[in-house]
Length: 406
Image (cartoon, rainbow, N blue to C red; front, side):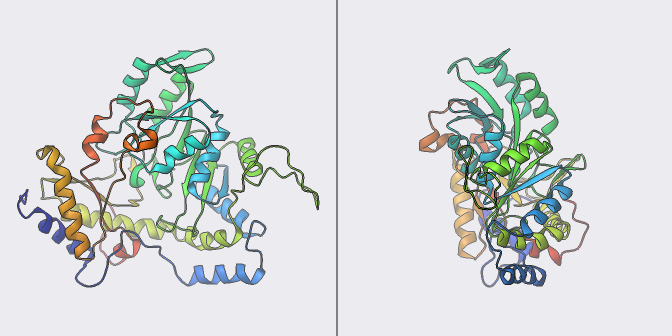
């Protein structure tokens, strides 16, 4: 069946509405899923009066999180950007270094690099996963990066290339085995931006700790929330201890003295936030199952529209489908008109209370990052005007049938 381009927006929205409704009121992009257990946990924390960085909830949440993902250590942070900043510092990223990351990502990925005094180096993604493309990255590194005994260096800028940061787009995991092999070949630290991917598994293992370390986010729009919040994941206890210390203003333990042994940050996750996260984390498999049912319904709804491609998980992956995603005009038939079509879809959707959204502006196009080094970003530039995120709250999938396989 073809609705392209005449009448496409209305046909597109009819498929969305067939899954989530939308006849009355507003259907947000992503709402937190909170219940009685969350209320009781937060009230207990309030009654304890330990609402800041001291209390039992933060260490308990960290232990539950590490056990769930399957790594040795989790360190709670005030937000996902702070978590990624600490990951990069812990990985040895220094002022003047370059860090390779996708241009198709939220701005926090590049900002965290800048907080280290380092420079983002943008690489391209693949159309299937929307994540870093190992093949294109391999070709780019071989043309532009020298591997020396003292590290990898950009041939054009002479700066050290210190780390690689794959971002798991909308909950779909990057091809970590291939990317990890590139990191070994070039001596790069692998730091995962898993902000969107708690509950996502690759070959049965939770993403976020495939490399040296990884960052999670628990913002109000993530699959679980602590209000604001994030975490560092790692299998390295010494790195976790350094991050925990540095993120707590580098204060040396003492009953009353305020003595600090290095520059630090006030990044630790407050106890009050962790009290919300504990019951959320205990429900995560329920939330993932609901979102996977929603994804399966969307995939079926768009299956017969050739001018749309629903972004589905790979066979070896289990995606949390944080945000369900459709690529408009996947064969490029519209050319430069694709963005106009998407604007028409978004305007019509918001007019009906369906709060769809476009993907972020590619990072290499933002004014503060336009002069940063980059590879050929042809796939990113093709996808950026075509991606649409659909309403993806877990409660939308709760009543849907099926086993949650998209």
